[in-house]
Every structure is written in C-alpha cells, then in structure tokens.
Length: 276
Ligand code: NDP
Image 1 (cartoon, rainbow, N blue to C red):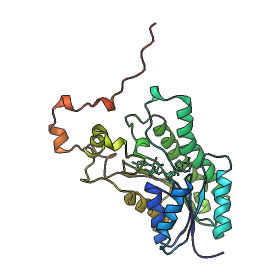
Image 2 (spheres, rainbow, N blue to C red; image 1 turned 90 degrees about the horizontal axis):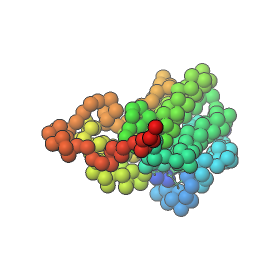
Image 3 (cartoon, rainbow, N blue to C red; image 1 turned 60 degrees about the vertical axis):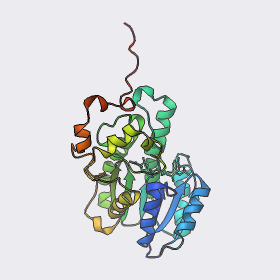
Image 4 (cartoon, helix red, strand yellow; image 1 turned 90 degrees about the vertical axis):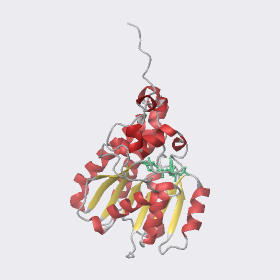
C-alpha cells in the first residue's frame, strides 16, 4: 500500500466539488471524482492534470444501486486504498412543501440523503485505520429556509447521519463531520441568483461584505478531512459568512421602506384551504 491518501469526492466536476478536488490534489491526496456527465469530468481532469496528485474520474449517478460499489472499487483498483469520502453531489432549486410532489421529494432525498448514506456504508468497509467523511449539507438544514422543502429535509437528514456515524465509528478512527455552506455562486445557484429577492435574502443578511466562493467551502472540507482537525468529530460547520448565526441586516435593508421588503418570490402562500 502506498503512503498517498485517496479520496472519493462526489459532484467533482463543478462548483464546490471541483474546488474541493483541486484543494485535495494540491495537498497531495489522490482523488476519484464522481459525477454523471463524462464530458464535464473530462474537462475537470484536463484542468487539474498539472497538480501534484493524480485524479481519476468515474461517470455515474450516485443514486444508482451499484454506484457505491462502483466508486469504491474504482478507488481501490486505481489507487489501492481509500481514506476520505466527501459526499457533495447535489441539486438545488427546491419548492416549498405544498408545491413538492412525491417524485420531487424522492429525487431530493435520493441524491442528498440516500446516496450519501449508501456511499458511506460502502466506504466504511474499505477505509483503513484512520479515515474521514465530510458531508456537504446546507445552512437550510440548520434553520428554516424559505422554499427549502425537500432540500432542507434531505440536508437535515444528512446532518443526522453525520452525527450518528461520528458516534458509531469515531472509536474506530473514522471521523464524520458536515459543512453547511450558505449560498455560493455556482451553476446550481446561477439562475436563483438572478432573482433580486434571492440575492437580497442572502447578501443583506450576511455580515461579510462579499459572496462566499467554492474555495471557501473547499477549505473547510479540506480542514475537516486533514489531520489539522484530528480532534473534531460530529460537527456541522456553517460556512456562510455569518448568515446563520447572526441577525445581521445591511444598512440598506434596515432603511428600506417596509412595503419593498416582502418580495413575492419569498412568500408563495400555502395550499388552498379545503372547505369544511
Ligand atoms: P453544482 O451544480 O455546481 O455541482 C453539482 C455536482 O454534483 C456536479 O458535479 C454534478 O455533476 C453532480 N451531480 C448532481 N447530481 C448527481 C448525481 N445524481 N450523481 C452524481 N453526480 C451528481 O453544485 P454546487 O457545487 O453548488 O453544490 C454542491 C453541493 O453543495 C450540493 O450538495 C449542494 O446542495 C451543496 N450546497 C450548495 C450551496 C450553493 O449555494 N451552491 C449552498 C449549500 C449547499 P453532473 O450534473 O454531471 O452529475
């Protein structure tokens, strides 16, 4: 077995997963990148080939029954070991509960709760004596988010999974933590960020006077995967410029006329009441 650590990172072809892959490679960790679109994966591999550690990709849908076995087997066949799992693949733009049909609910839970659970289960059997799991959750798992629906439910479930695994496997040298990013401009949030109300909900309530970046989240994921965080287990770390933990409002929002502060997008009502 070589000394080089090996990570599986899902959603490695874009946004937070791509930045995380770059950070791991820069730090000498070999990465197996998982995503569905082989072209996007190939583009990522081309861009990252100059980094000091090797990057191998496998195109698969994390919700497929055989996805966990295929990803872990690929890591072991290619690099001979597995030390880190980053469950990052996800989708956005959820709907409020009353607008969410069963297919949508199943899709969100499938990608962002069932798949991470199953991949963790597979990875646990392949890990060596020390290993880490980082689940990419969301600020929408920590507090009520407008229009969170199935997304909030899946991410809150992911936090629960993280805490359970921390307790269950911590004594075996396997640490489990989660990061909960605030809104980060990526392809996932691109079209929502075109909405003034969505931008203001996030920017105006964040003390930091800038948007977060995929690198901000990647740095936290790397920290929780590296020996520097060796005494940290079972945490959900908000990476959000203070959005979740403060009651901040920009001067502009504080002084805005009240009637301008309730954009339609945020309050889409509730299901029509049934008559008695
Ligand atoms: P992107 O859309 O930029 O990237 C998503 C990645 O996941 C892509 O590589 C995509 O590749 C992959 N993916 C999506 N579905 C599947 C699937 N079924 N099987 C395998 N791979 C899949 O999103 P972000 O980087 O913004 O998001 C990454 C994670 O961060 C998500 O879990 C998201 O919920 C979380 N997050 C993001 C925030 C943000 O504001 N951006 C805020 C809070 C949390 P492909 O389409 O080819 O499969």
